[in-house]
Amino acid sequence: EVTMPRPDRPRIMCVANQKGGVGKTTTTVNLAVALALHGNRVLVVDLDPQGNASTGLNVPHHAGISDVYDCLIDNVPLAEVAQQVEGIPNLWCVPATIDLAGAEIELVSVVARESRLARAIAGHPEPFDYVFIDCPPSLGLLTVNALVAAREVLIPIQCEYYALEGLNQLINNINLVRQHLNPNLDVSTIILTMYDRRTRLADAVEQDVRNHFGDKVLQTVIPRNVRVSEAPSYGQSVMTYDPGSRGATSYFEAALEIAERGVDKVAGHNA
Ligand code: ADP
Ligand code: MG
Image 1 (spheres, rainbow, N blue to C red):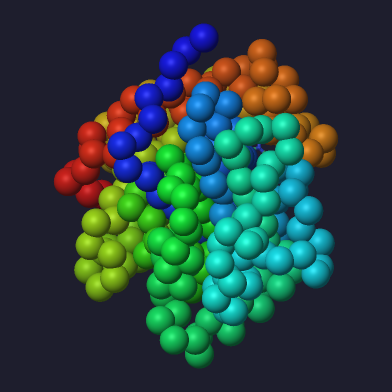
Image 2 (image 1 turned 45 degrees about the horizontal axis):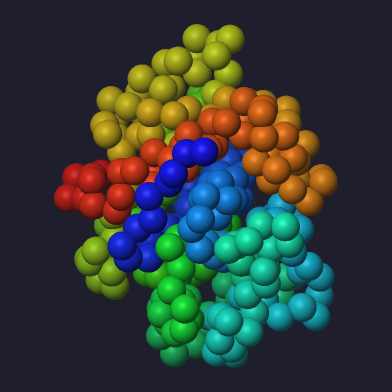
């Protein structure tokens, strides 16, 4: 049994990349489960109206369920909305329902619109070791709320052509949020996802990303693995669906790396 160090302070991580399909939700769900299974108190905030993280954790999120929209727009405390994830002690999820689709527009006219999520998380009575915020594939007010609430940004990058394209835009937004709203925000972690070792392209992308982001990039690379993509249809993470699969073992290694680096290892080396 491997011991995973617990952080001294809560680590709030915004999982962002405005590209869809790069592995944000998969990474959120599997890291959260891996950390929770090893003794950490973990919260997943599903901030994507598609509700994929809620689905992946098998948390009810049909219309009428209290969700993150209620926290953002109606000031409902996080504790009233967070659901315990079945079968995984220490793991909670604030789900997203279809209501959240309207939030991007409704937030525009709300007081302190950029810091609604930060306030909701700060108001939670019992601290978590980790909070993962699964962002939608856009750079709108929902993602800005996540960037303001977080201390760290975790960027999943899919090992394919154009992987780095568009990242400048994300980094610019992060810099703006840092300047105006959240000076401590740090891109702490880059994770390479869906790596296909049969292709030379994946290798080239990996080198590119490592040259660009240095030691922010986890040593562990997540391979493309069919068990990872099957797991959500069983309402499970790959960590429980097939713990021996390469997908599960690599997400476990990635979680361990994140836990061992701590929050401050790469602080000050902003992208
Ligand atoms: P995002 O949240 O960035 O839109 P997802 O996490 O939903 O991306 O992943 C996009 C698709 O790729 C999903 O169908 C998911 O199951 C699949 N996928 C993600 N990671 C892997 C992997 N390592 N191996 C195989 N399929 C994966
Ligand atoms: Mg997603």
